Structure formats: C-alpha cells, structure tokens
View 1 (cartoon, helix red, strand yellow):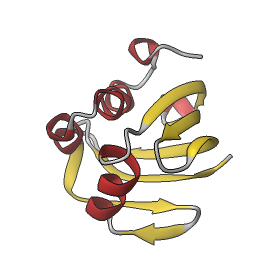
View 2 (cartoon, one colour):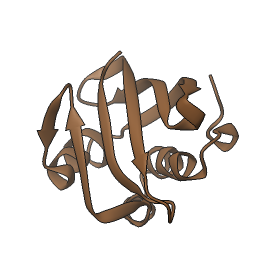
View 3 (cartoon, one colour):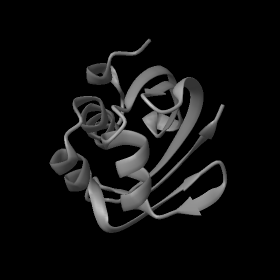
View 4 (cartoon, one colour):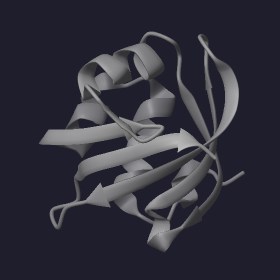
Length: 107
C-alpha cells in the first residue's frame, strides 16, 4: 500500500487524507464548488453520495497503486456499509489545485 503522504499529486493526496480522517471541511475545501462525481459509470449527487458512502459509514481509502501522474488510483476502499472492495478512482484537477470531478467504481 502507498501511504497517503507519498501520493504524487498534492490535490489527490489532500482528498485521500480528508476521506481517511473523516474530515468533511477538508474534503469540501479540496473540491470546486460545482464538483461532480460518478460511481460505476453513473453520475451521482456528490453531497448525498459522499455522506452515505464516506462520512456516515466510516469510509477509508488504502491506496494500492497510482498512475496518470497520481490522478488515477487503485484503492482498497472500506466502509461500514459494504465492507472492503477494490475500486478505481480517477480525478480531474483544476489549475488551482482542486478536484472538479472524480469517478469511482469497481476495479
């Protein structure tokens, strides 16, 4: 596993760190105001999805690998609802270092 502190892209590093800390404020700070996301190829309401899949269910990301200059991850994702699963994450990062979109799904 890759320690979050060792992730290549600083924005993705901040995203993973916020998720693992359960820190909603830090998570929101790394997103653009109009950020979007998809799960298994379907667009989702970002606020509802992150509350359900991350914050109210103890979501944690253990990064197995990274590619695309650190903007694509393979993660062993765990939460209290679904247990652990291997997932892929891809991030679109703006020039000012914020996530404008992320996509996740089974890897």
